Length: 294
Image 1 (cartoon, rainbow, N blue to C red):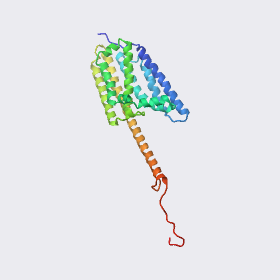
Image 2 (image 1 turned 120 degrees about the vertical axis):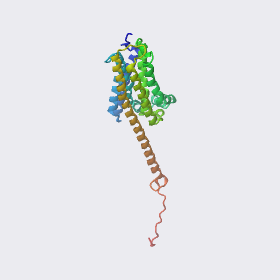
Image 3 (image 1 turned 180 degrees about the vertical axis):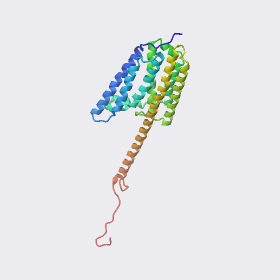
Image 4 (image 1 turned 90 degrees about the vertical axis):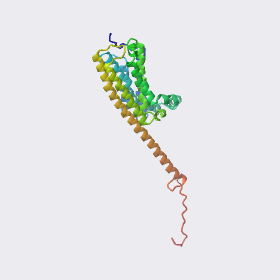
């Protein structure tokens, strides 16, 4: 069987993904700069995280990476579908957009979309894990991978799916941005989802070490190298995802604690120091009569 190879040209879809990644990165950096110019704080590390994630997506999408054809595809998957989404989500793009946009129609639309029911369904962690990890199993354990090697347009669609599925999955389990629909899932559910998705990814890498995707004939050394990249690279990215999950949980807990403290302060101010509404002291003091006993 002739070894299958990825088409060097990802087609118009792949080119669109690469161009969109660069445009969004430029937009993020411009919004962060605008925020700082008006005196607001925004961590420069978030700029670095988003810039590296966007540049990585634009770099890996066209292909032509190192290694054999299968290894190239695996590295592309690790960058576009796993590492870049973690870096992009860690930069909290929705938080930046809500802070940078002036009050108005676009900002209200963004808030309404973030609070909408479809977004809540889309950010269900088990569902996002199924779309992400399940899509990989469908790609590598069916004839689909062999078909994408012959059709650049389909290859580009697969890349787009990897990027979107990775972003949605990462967004759903991290809970860093203010999306109430996604935060209703407890850290236990999100953590269990990360473990399950990681296990599915690891098992898939092990199967690819011995059995290539149906309809392909990659060299054995290429399969082994690509499978190792998928296994160990996936573990590394999932460890970073677990860190983000912990940061999101801690941030949410701190925010809840701060709100509770603020409510307590407001309640104490409304009651007042002597227990009267509005802080007025209604205790009646008797003034001793002149010449009387004190």
